Image 1: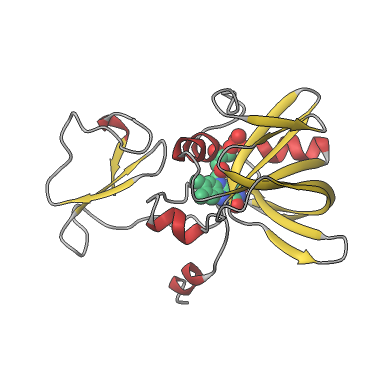
Image 2 (image 1 turned 90 degrees about the vertical axis):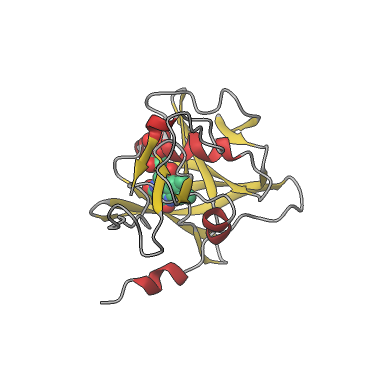
Length: 214
Ligand SMILES: Cc1cc2nc3c(=O)[nH]c(=O)nc-3n(C[C@H](O)[C@H](O)[C@H](O)COP(=O)(O)O)c2cc1C
């Protein structure tokens, strides 16, 4: 089966967040779809290992902030490549609290507040179906697409994202370049030479040791 065509499926980029008995969690997702206008109902797909999934299952409600193209890329690195179990992801960014849920309100167009209606177990992930019970629009800025995230922000999908694709390139890729990926934010660089020891990630500031050759 030719899986390359899956890359032509379009998505947006979102921050889903929740709170259960004072515990906050949030992560980046691209797998949000509106599934009915009545309700209205949406679905999201969350990896079972993501802490946000655990918290949503307990709280039975969550918020989705719609990321815009002007977002500080560090917000995507923090929410998409670290775990809420280990760090407070919200502390350096602006947020509002609705129904006890922290919602990032910088670099986002607005939010949907949702309550869980059904959860479908699909082995590695849970597909969470939810009713939108409230919304707020912050601005008219352009929402970020998954293509924009890859082509302009130059981020990639981490292992726990449903759209993750392992890279099978060896030393140099088919264009004769070395390819490195920052394991903190996913920034990808292709160069003719190996990366120097003092190289610093232009997206999240990580040191050279965070770059993995693909
Ligand atoms: C662009 C992008 C898209 C992602 N999409 C999803 C997704 O749809 N579902 C998912 O479970 N994880 C997705 N992830 C991965 C989670 O955001 C990541 O595993 C996060 O560290 C989980 O944090 P948590 O443990 O605090 O929940 C995505 C990450 C990025 C950067």
